[in-house]
Length: 281
Image 1 (tube, rainbow, N blue to C red):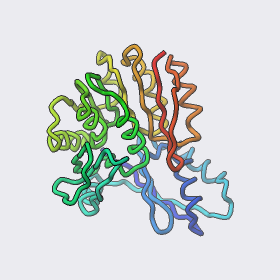
Image 2: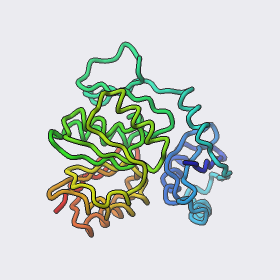
Image 3: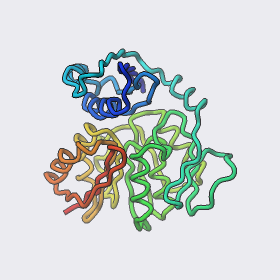
Image 4: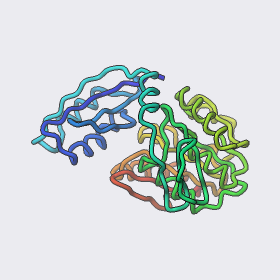
């Protein structure tokens, strides 16, 4: 899948302004961000990018002392892959329980769960706050025998971890063909035999389930649109863990969930990012 790459320049550069810009531009369809020396780059699917919303955000930006300019270009799949190949990532440890690392890395800490991830283009190495929040929740849950759905799976890390913790089977999907191939590769790396990965969006859930647990680490707009589909395939007394959005988005998503018969049990926060735990009422 092709993405749009938006490069933002902040003059003068201000870290708080950059964080706020990332939070606000998610409303225009931007899904992920990378810091640069003068600002940041944001990525959006062409069909979800709303230029009018972005222009409105920039014209009303609350920090008036910072001037923001931006450019838009197409980000090629091969460029994303080459960048991952160059950068890789250092081992990520979560609460002394989980270590996420590249294949072949040595001198790893002794923890209960070792997860090998070859990320390529796909999102999900445990470095991002949203992935870490969900993994921490999963580490404290009893998943033995559970049927799990990993929506927008990226590298497949969340579903892989659920399988390691005893889930009976895991269904994962992603709209990005690169992510699907990468997740399948990571499943093989971790010797997971009960996880299926499909290419597509929430429309493919028709006739699937019911699932005891649904995981969705996606941007706010997609979560809002897909919550009805998630609710329709959630088992009685099942749970949903959402992340990929900011703290200020919680009320909107909580209201949407409650309208679908889902109760908000609690939320967690990490550097402006948030996660929600929903229970089926």
